[in-house]
Length: 165
Image (tube, rainbow, N blue to C red; front, side, top):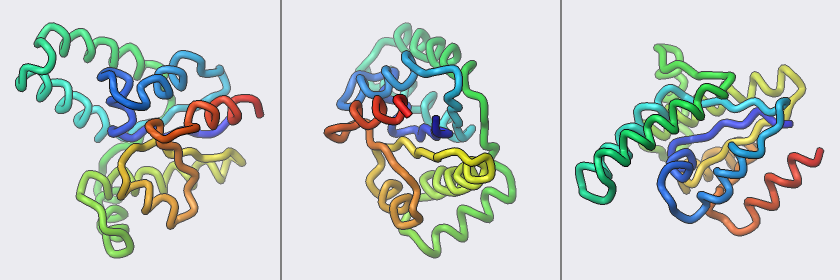
């Protein structure tokens, strides 16, 4: 099974119903013991921000936001690999900006994905980046990173095929 990095634009689909939520739900709910999920600590902040902004905007209640954050805490207990935002990741993100037109947060996610791909390669594993962010997908593909957009047609089949390997 691959080392799977789940970026914020995909992760939010676990907690807010939108196109691709079924894919992310299956990714989490039907995962095998040999699957390794990885997250950037930036994703934790971004997810919390997204849910609290929905509550402040009246799209969900504050109680729902708290419940969804609790569900997130349960889900992340299964995350085996965390990428910390440190000085070296900031440097790697700044270098990535010279090659790819990304926003700051996306550059940090991208630098995290590059690190995780290196970890996976060293362990002889496939690396999969899960994102619905178009610019980030473009950067990943330009660097030869396998990507999965949960909102894209065929994503569910792609996950199921990976799990059969």
